[in-house]
Image (cartoon, rainbow, N blue to C red; front, top):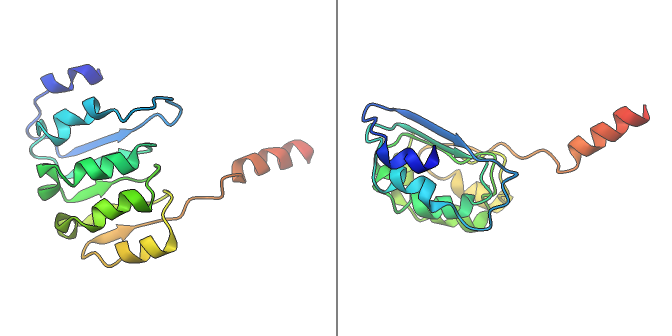
Length: 146
């Protein structure tokens, strides 16, 4: 299906959400997946862009801020991924982010300092913190022991 993106023409599509497979062990950023969306603009009517759960969230942020799509969407959702302060710097240096209605960076790896910087945007910034890494494992052990 991914190889077919360049053949899709949906000019009226307003909501596109991709939840990346966190268990995918690719070591390279899958730019070929995003190129039709971010460069070729196959969804010119897009309002909501959700690229969630990617370990390549820093690279996605860097690519999005260079895309003409950032000028037209209202919601950018990069939640549940591997976004760090390094990737968030690309967002901070992009004036178009201020034109968004919502920027969702929840459940990533952002420092309190970076979250403070992002909160200065003119848009609504959603930045729910991640649960502790071992929380699920602890609950499983407690269940087994109890």
